[in-house]
Image 1 (spheres, rainbow, N blue to C red):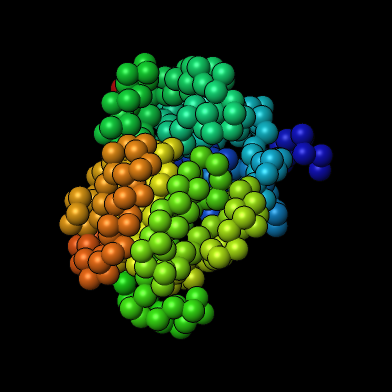
Image 2 (image 1 turned 90 degrees about the horizontal axis):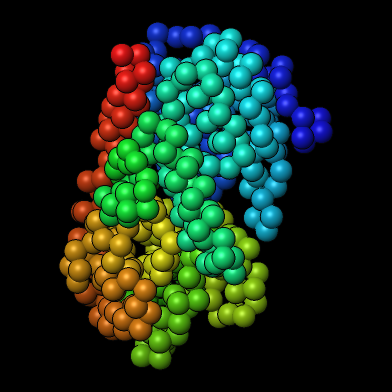
Length: 397
């Protein structure tokens, strides 16, 4: 099939309705097995709603190996690859196909997780049919323009995002600070929905000396770890600067970067002394987290930062900027270190200070684990379910 055509046949056969109390269509440009915080978060939310007997249909771009729909009746639509991001795709406009499907069997509510062409199609179709719509604000795309030399587009992107989200009944963001910031930009009906962590997967007991041996490092040496998309907006060069400053005072340190992205090849070529693992499966990722000691998290572009919470649950002390998930969950100098936002010198200084005392790092890591392990997904899904139910009832009343 040509990538620009709509597979109407796939859209015409929705799943048989069960006894679920709500039929939800969740529209997203990213989904499992793609490895990123948005796909992980959405997977958790969808799984949680399905376990509570809601009928959730995921509408998403087609990935390699997809054939129309899966056991849940999820809908896969034509897509194109995201430039420079191997394995990631974005959806094409699909308004007509969604109108056909939703006229036949309308969902009670449409939740749109991404603002691309597929999300815009879903917004238009749902509003035409009078279906309640909510949205998630997962990525600061307006800020990304500054990281890719497109600063002149900042205002245009911000205006589009505001227009998009203000046409939905609720916009969900992960922190109260972001809700405040979006409110100042003119976003309406913004609600906070935090994130959880899988404390069964990410835990200190996954620590592996075998893995550390493969890095050439003993039990009392220091491993600095960074996990995330290896891309310009993640500010990874600052973590590498911090590592080199640490190595100047303790030569036994090793740096491991887990993840893939458009900057990986360039950074790996320029830093042959740093281990770049690429993307890992969940079990391997959990083992890498727990086998580290100090998590360097220099990103300045997060809406939340799931990896910080995963590192904490794995028993790592985290050095990060004082915003998003680190600001919510780290007690400074007790369960990690918080540098003033965008203060690179202080980030490096704090990294070096922590690295000089391995016993302190481990005490902070133990406290971090206690704090993160209390962030269960169950309570987050409770909130998500309540927000969706409220939005649906406002249409029905």
